[in-house]
Image 1 (cartoon, helix red, strand yellow):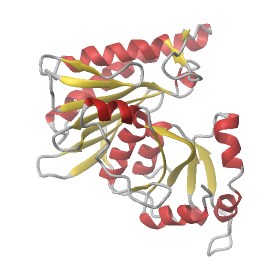
Image 2 (image 1 turned 90 degrees about the vertical axis):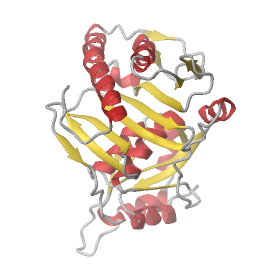
Image 3 (image 1 turned 60 degrees about the vertical axis):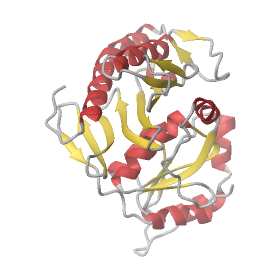
Length: 309
């Protein structure tokens, strides 16, 4: 893909890698869906999670592709233990990867996403995030640290059109579309169904007397990217929590777009993701975070006030 853009060089390289992977993996997943051969593997690292041949292929493809333009880095993938790549025993960059998110749905050709975050250990913050959407026209969500010190976010479509993301939603709770990852019946849907104050507030009539609030399903980092684009107004996670590879790339995109992400105590989630040395990286990769991500601070606070935790 050739894109005329103001993206920094590293961001362009990561965008091109993710874009290439999307083109390569999409026909594999469509064939898996049509043939019903979904390539399921035993998941030894995350018991109960679906793992396919396609997850493992993308994990290896990213490692090799990143090494083509990054001389040394720490590769922290969902599918394996963190690894030192290259000759530098203490590289600055840590690359956090979820090679294939929602892979249970991806092998059915329904939804599939991929996440990369490039984190500078010296800066203690991300410098690039790219979230790819395998099956939809809106193909890439990107955030990057620019030379002037600003974080900027973009959306790129399959035909190469690039759009800045800097106008997240200004909705209040009575007019909001709020999403949640509620696919697992016991772990996620049941806790959501018990959020009675949240549903009462979301379903309340607005100033015009109409009930416009809606609940929807969304997935991983892409849910925060949808908030960044203004496609949805907020996403919440109060049950199991998101792992670092699911939360951090989308959080950086939403941060760069001007959105709000807080924990369930109301504290802003910082850009220091705890990827600063191998011991901290290993610890971070085993943790989960609950959060509220919204297009504006007022909506985040409205949600915080009605979510039971």
